[in-house]
Image (cartoon, rainbow, N blue to C red; front, side, top):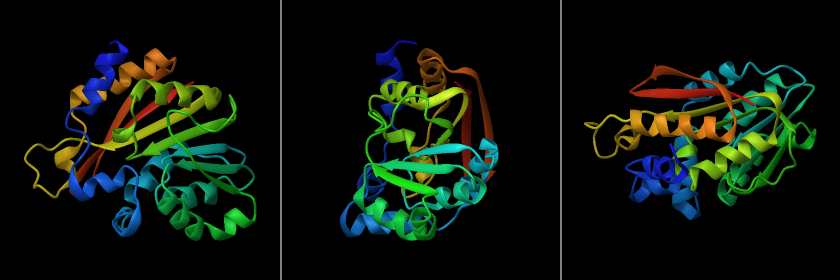
Length: 218
């Protein structure tokens, strides 16, 4: 699948309108509400952290850290390593910094503002990386996947997670704007084009949503 078709497949129907658009780059009062909603449950964050199998000395990157829930879970495991997060939203940076205040002060967590398509890090810096409910908003998709590949060390693990599409979900149910099988296929193709190997998919029902996780090796 070429770059254009991959990006187009991800964009069709995945990005929700209205209030849900705040989840792409939260800002202002609505952005603070979006952060609160994202932090209400951590079941998906815990599952992805489990899939990453974080070891004490891992160097872990979260792309699109939101309110910092997964950052805290990752830092609890990477006790002798470091957890780094990047997110374009200053509102999310503030919420995540508050949630992880002690770990930031101890130098075990570092948070930066930036884009998934231009990560502010050198090559091969991280042993593991993840993105949870962030890849819907990556544009162009393939540029973000190439960046994830660039910053991972050889043998590093990437886990991408997103909700799957439920076409008959209610208007305010995020599953109505989830990823279709075709969109997930486009992401798999993009991972392989970027250079990743051993791309596999897992799914789990969490509450009223089905979450898909794509695992890939550098």
